[in-house]
Length: 274
Image (cartoon, rainbow, N blue to C red; front, side, top):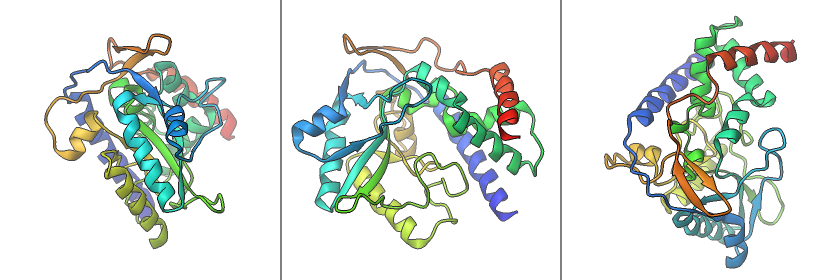
């Protein structure tokens, strides 16, 4: 019961932040993108990059806004100095990538199973699952900082042994251990989260309170966490990798997967789970 109560509390706090993100002003600066991997290689900084597909046949894109790359490189160097290696799990996501991620079987099944667990074993209404999907996988462009090119998801490894610096769960853990300050991880795991976050935030990448792997800078989430009421520089954009031009998403409040799509995914997920 305590774990379910904690999870519900965190999800509702997450939704309150979603509401803040939806209302927060953005003055898109139209800054282009740069490659994290190319800059790391040029700087001689050892980094790792996820080799899995994000969903379907879609490759991950290890690009973020140009002026943020130098900070990621500085973070990677600082981690190397303490015999750690930064692994970038995720960078920019297009609308297609984000939409497909929400529907990715492994991801959606985890969302649905947590909703069923939270509801005491019953399948909750589709509106409830839709609400949780907004918090857990950013089903609305305005709140998804990956779609702004201003966020990275990370793991960290020991440089000498290739062991992960363990934070109480792997990347994309979806459980009561997922919030940054979860009481369901041990002291060593919490300390690892704190030390990694200190390195990230020393270079301006703020931690997202409800996902221990997610950090962002220069967007609405960053401003909210820092109490900065000025409009954010980065909002959700379409990016043309050929020209490096960006354009704000026309209607960033339209869900990527509407209620009807979520309802269909519930039916498919139930067949898999059963």
